[in-house]
Image (cartoon, one colour):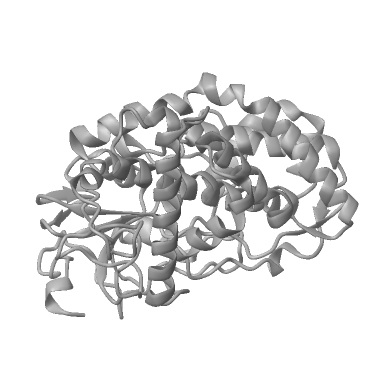
Length: 425
């Protein structure tokens, strides 16, 4: 690793981060798609601020304790300025990955100007959240629930008619959230397959080449630019049209891209993981929900907490020297916060390694905390609850079509997931 990429302390300070032999590559592999990496438990107890090597070859620090992760995400000294010259790169691609790109929309080839940067922090970001957050209030999201129920019913009917076994991802997990976010933004549903390809390349860690990433970036940028122009010319009853009066064209393009990717990718993968978790111990989980459907909301929250396959985590750039977990972090350090490891911290959750469907309260970190917490978390919650409620009602005999130990974690992207979740009924 080049010397200017060595962002961790040098080990001379007794409070410095522990140097693990060989600097382990990160993310750590899961033993199975539903089991957490054993490194999480070891690092929480022995090395809460650990040096790791990213797919790019760059070094970073990893936080695994609940309190440290929560504090980091809430602290303005940990910024999203991951395109800084001394920030570590996540991906093995030339551009360093989605967190490092000056513009995720264009493959880094088009200068989209200052408005994009202003959306990442400070007053600009607060303004952006205020504008966009109006579409994701609890009241507005709940108003979408009847349409989600109807959509879930139709997708499950199609799945049943096609016959078992079925893969829950393409049958239900992907189309429901992508249809919902398309309708919310005013994007044609028929383009969903293009969104999936663009999203995967934008979230690359080790799967795609730089040429593939750049090509998708150009296509996505042009698509959203044309869509924004159409919304400005002929507004509709959708979020992009509503925002057109308060945002520049560049801000609208960036907002549309960000919400389109975030609005379907993480929820789509979470639907598959949630169903797999519940069916992996069918007697104690699925059948308990059949007996008491009122547990669905808390079961969704627990699935989010219990998720052992979330992907990369959330990186941050230290803008000024600070201390975390007894370790001094110099300015310029890149820190990765593992919300999933924090969610398994026994210091924060009783029975942290057990899936308790009735857990309340459940202050998990799956959506982040602080000023950059997920703006669409209420939408994700209602989508997950809706899918689970309809599945329980329509397919009470649902089960995995195979052994849970044979499920394979998706590789090479920032967002985790399971390649296939085969089910029968």
